[in-house]
Image 1 (cartoon, rainbow, N blue to C red):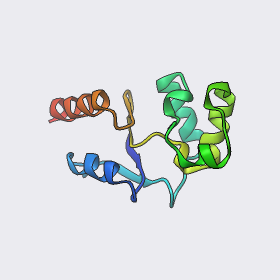
Image 2: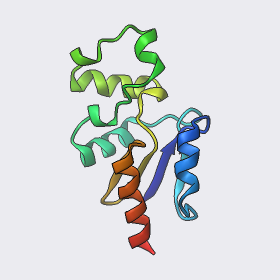
Image 3: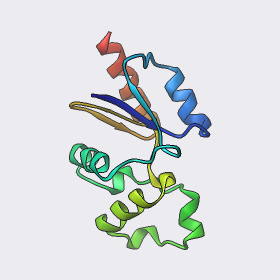
Amino acid sequence: MKKVFYLNTCDTCRKILAQFNLKNWELREIKKEPITKEELEEMHEKTQSYEVLFSKKSTQIKLRELDVKSLTEEDFKELLLDHYTFLKRPVFITDDRIFVGNDKNNVAALQEFFRMAK
């Protein structure tokens, strides 16, 4: 399995995706095709945390007047399933690895993964 969950309107996602040969990857645009409960469970299995998958920059946080510090793992799970902008992106997932988000360390790990996969 090789999947990428991303948002087409996100410049950062497009910039990161453009760095890699994704010919054999399933590309999932999460606004058009939101993540399923099963996919979220799969991501959680690899990260052991819903919070790790949760984007604390989502515009929905302010709109819904959420206090992120008071959210539980179950809250994060429900929010991730409720609205696509809560997913930290992009998410690259393989049979045994997951790369979540666009921070510098994650992108560097992703670049190393693709270098080693050649």
